[in-house]
Length: 234
Image 1 (cartoon, one colour):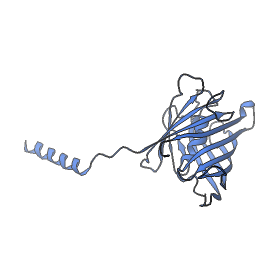
Image 2 (tube, helix red, strand yellow):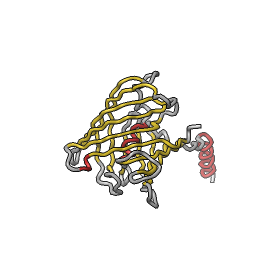
Image 3 (tube, rainbow, N blue to C red):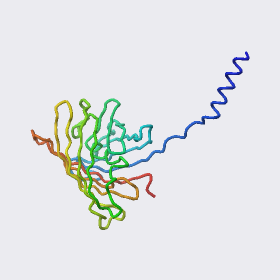
Image 4 (spheres, one colour):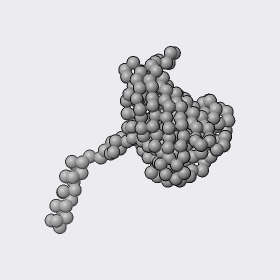
């Protein structure tokens, strides 16, 4: 009996010294998207991408969940959850390991050090290297293949403030994406990013991606994103 009382007392002391942690903060973003068309509120190839950001987690990344809801469909696609690291690395380690074209464009840009080369005046040039481990969902298809690692290298150039868009600067980027296993596919990418320095997220993105060698009309893809809701913007 004395032993049980002693153990209970020790448990109470430990509980008092280690209070429950508060839930991690969450940020909620909504983007209109266009796939092979301009981002818009309606029309073929358009929809909304809802993003939830939670963290940070122990290794310094944040958990990012993305859900695509295509225009004129009844239900949204399954939510994909991946870890995004400060430099833009993306790891989708839970089945189906999936990431849509819109998420593949946006998720790396949510790494909090991705735009580290941007100067106070909104100018600067730097190279950003990161990896994406995911099963890329081709186009509007809901089928995801096997996960592979893609090495991505981008040269980014800050062009300064955007006229008429207070607090946003233009960043132009050109890069390569190289699959490091499997079919060893390659792609080039040209991006234009309107980045809001005050809220530290992209407010608009254009990403034109070309897979090489080109084998069909599906070797080219364009993604456009436009931020329409941010839980941290007042």
